[in-house]
Length: 305
Image 1: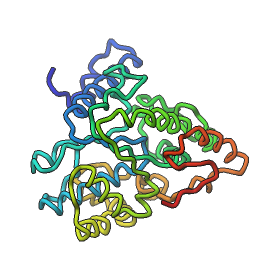
Image 2 (image 1 turned 45 degrees about the horizontal axis):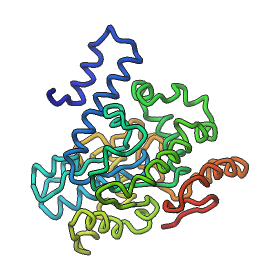
Image 3 (image 1 turned 30 degrees about the vertical axis):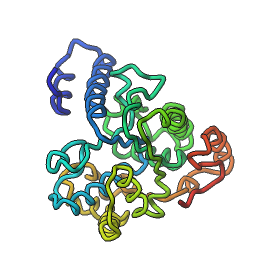
Image 4 (image 1 turned 90 degrees about the vertical axis):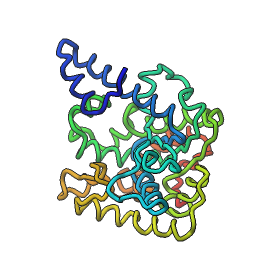
């Protein structure tokens, strides 16, 4: 079967008018999973993360590093094998939320699809993830994507704490994601655990660790250049200016007058505490208590890196 690109996939699904909406969404999941499976299988390294864990930031840091190291143009972000095609010394790197691949392979009870891969697991405190997801859901997610992800259609009617406690969308979803991956990491070819909180505290060191995991030694000067160019403040300026050097739409914002609609919104470690009361935090922390210690997200703890 030939490769189905995003636009062609959307056209294909829309033309199948005889299918129910549920069937169309299931087909879309399958097609996305098929693409993800093929690219994960061919990738040299796979970066896995729940949503809102700093994936775009890591992508921009890696992109900037390879641009500096190999003199690549700045108008395109790293995206699976595009950089590898420009220079074969650059590995194929597949970013994934591990969302659709199981709809194709049916491996729902394990991470078997990743066992032969070199995996970087990028994580963040589920409490901060839930808050970030909530504002994205309210401000930027289009109706079709809400249906595809099975999100409620009317976010204005759902308070943030109610959303945070929803099993399929809020903190429980991220907790389940991390709990599912914890026992499976040792079964991969190799793995590296990276915490968003550590990226915020020491971005140069963490980027250096990620590159070393890929058998690439970065100089202090290269890391300093990357960190300066891709700082949280500079990324926010790029998003505000709408002159994204990546040439992609990853940081293109729909409403510049709404600070909560920005992809680079706050990035604050422990910022979830600004949105919940003490009783709500007690309920939330009971969920966090089910996480294994390897992640470092103990109840009542606010990681600083």
